[in-house]
Image (cartoon, rainbow, N blue to C red):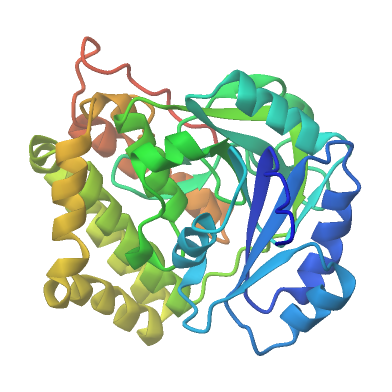
Length: 361
């Protein structure tokens, strides 16, 4: 019998969907790292597009798993987790490029914090910040922390409210405890839900700003993406929040409902239809959220204050509106209302988040 290869210390898990051009940038930066005790497991969600054959010829050490069903980012990562061998796992988007020493730094930090999930600092191609972790409004709308700010503003290791799924590492032990991604999400906000679930189970969310990775991501809000963002925003709150929290935030949720419907109306009929479909999903697919909610509420070790204390008051209008003046006006009008409606306003229960600046929501 052939001798089996020893297990690597780290498994790098990538989900690909027509990603050959991105992988041609990502994989060279990965294999050029000073840290080498890793394997690459790639789940190919489009196995007939030629990416698998290209990898076989160009990067034969990459373990390719064909997934003809295309289960999205969430399902693809869950499939990949069944095949990884490392004690530590790095979830990495194909549209990333690691800077020199990033992998060694991220592994070192993750090993020093075995009860944490650790993000890298993500940069835009122009060198500004793409994300140093994520932040979320308490009604579920999330955004990148530090978006478009100077990279020098974010240094060292720091706790962050939520993870960006583009590049983060943790141990298989932590993943086994909290579970993988929620497959029903398909794509978008699955990193938000995973972060909140981890916090409620007692794990830390950290960002190592010295582990630097460029994320070649362009925001493009299509009607299809709007559907998943809105459906998964509500799904996250239904899974995560305690019943008393949902009741207390219901006035604020109604305000956000009005805001998202107004946004859809401004964008046109495809967005209105997408918003309507997002609500109908919960009616037609109770099996898609009720068991997940029951499991989370039974498993949680902390109350909602652990995430509410980091939740933002202002909505990210500046990222949704082309007009900076209109974004500022909407923020000025809605911020006091959201502040008043915020659950657990008592400082003895949860510290009040500062009002966001115009560059961060």
